[in-house]
Length: 418
Image (cartoon, rainbow, N blue to C red; front, side, top):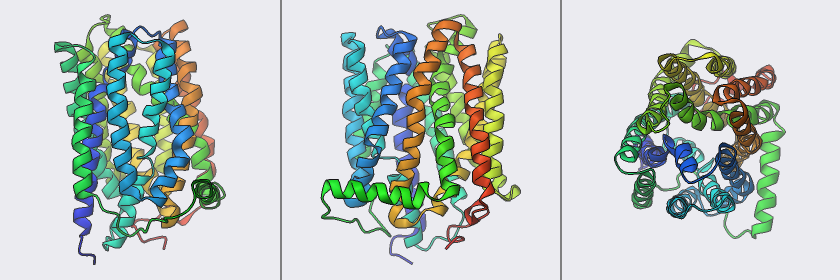
């Protein structure tokens, strides 16, 4: 047993999860409204989000190199600094009513900030848990983290909506930047690389080449992982769009385009669903033998719910569907994270997880502006219906992963597949 306990590792992970999520959630409830208020059309607003995902695609692998050469802690700190700076730039562009090309450029930089997190934080957790002798289920840790994220999302989204209602749409972005500065200090004090030794001294080009080889050898060439990666563009791309489109969708159903608190409530409802989903995840895992059963069931139900939004005209029913969509997606997240982590060796964990995130981001580049254009032409309900049909395309791909019968599909503890 390490001097640092597994309990302390989990506590640090939960603190980082809380800080990251509450910082982000201050603007989740009003982000689309913020972009529209800055003078962008629906197409331009979701195209800006698409440039954000483009930034994640471009920088996913290079920042994976940072995690595997400088360390997971260094990657987290760089990401937090980048996000704080780009958040302030977003606020300035809103003040200046900047043209679309400026939003596109800063959105790419915002994507860079998030790529420092993807893979690195989960990899840090799993390596540190192994190093400190943890023998429990990964679903339990990821489920608790999701509850923590849901609580912080609920708090941040409600506060963000209320702050915007009482002041203006720009203030929540300043609050977000301030919280990120605090997290730089917190992570610097608490986060240490355990169970992982950074590979230093490699030249950048050689390091990128090595990361790509590792991603292919330990990720894409393993069929069970490959099919989950190929499914990601459909599920993640639609998920990115739906989360932000549901804000103005609720305002349309309510008939009040200035009800910013209602937009914050949309994110808060999703947060509440996330809390419940994270709490239920370990129970669902004990009741369901295979992790892929959870993934397939989640995609099937969430796709059907998105289709149902097209037929809704009453606000209470739209809110109920939002809660159902959030719950079905939230229950599956711990299972997916555990499934992937259990299949990836420690030395390649951050890079392969980043590669999976890259696939999801690639889908967002195409799906978000396409569905945004559909919303301009036929309304948000129609665009959500199309999103449901697109996400359903992931079902046969997840079934193909299930057919591989990888030991990780039935693993119940962190060491089960070793």
